[in-house]
Length: 419
RNA sequence: GUGAGUGUAGCUCAGUCGGCAGAGCACCAGGUUGUGGCCCUGGGGGUCGUGGGUUCAAGUCCCAUCACUCACCCCA
Image (tube, rainbow, N blue to C red; front, side, top):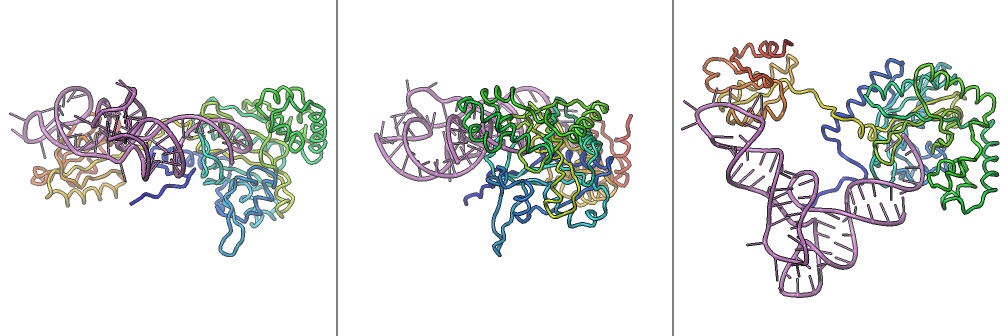
């Protein structure tokens, strides 16, 4: 029979990769709990309109990267390409929105974007997300950044760069966009790459982020948003940076940092790694003060981040499951029943391990146990059955002794005693 | 959506000028009675991605197709 392929850009997670994912999730729950963020789980499928309105009709994500299809009654549904929109929708649906209190949530789970896969980019990918709603203090920005940074540290990651920028607000951003458009419009078109000749009119900020040498030269002399913030935005941004410095969190000001989702304003940031290929952003986020209202909720501010787990996994080395406590080796068919009972009792005592249901030679069993990297190997054959005993062998020292079958758990306890 | 590259054993890959399908690792067994790791010996494993074409002969050349990888773009 022919096989069925898995869907392009989708993948199965076997150990040890799956262990890395469990590790990232466990750490997220542990660290975020310290900041009083609570876990929120929202649906994977939402009405398409939610993303069109939040992420922005003109963005690449909405225009060409969404998994969108009609349901059986012809309503347009979309598999979430990011988490924030769903979180806000859920928040607006909840009592929290009308309470007037600050809400802190985190979410873990799969996201979907229809893109050509490459290193660090798959069609189903996983994000760790955190969002704070109802607070516009610069301390909120600093808390989110501090939590993100602390999380990445807890994973043991080094050599990461935090890049930060401010995009301004509805008071100062439109004026800057106009100024930038004028500046770019005065340039000779030929200095831009093909893409930027188009962008100069439609999305001028993007030109500043282009990697083509010609565009970079132009960008170097272009007006910068950080120099054109309104007094309120400038004050906010300066405070954020000052708090970060007091925390000892190093950042790089990147005036060209532009994010692909339309809802960001004021503080935006990315965390970059140079060790994972061309898709180098392992985390990103920012402030989205107008978004809750745009989605029909109260006019409360918000800020959040997303971490890409596939990209973090590229940086995680040697995350392994704890070794098993025992491997039960049966040397004769007549010992099988007894072995099964002993294993069952050990498990009920909290020990972890497996049993081979094959009767094999001692040598063969020990080779298995050795490969599986278990702490002990239990051997049960005819000799032991006659004496009501079981052999317990410590696989790291090679020390072995026979104990009463009723004492196996005590024996394991002794073997595991630290010297 | 665009471009480049790669498909041969479970894995990583050799395979010359078109001439019998290979290595390392992994797996299984043995190396004196029921004792692992190191070492030695032996063994099982293949639709050479798939379909067509050229040829006495195709893993190798040609065409098509599928899958995967990397990059552009964009983003986590």
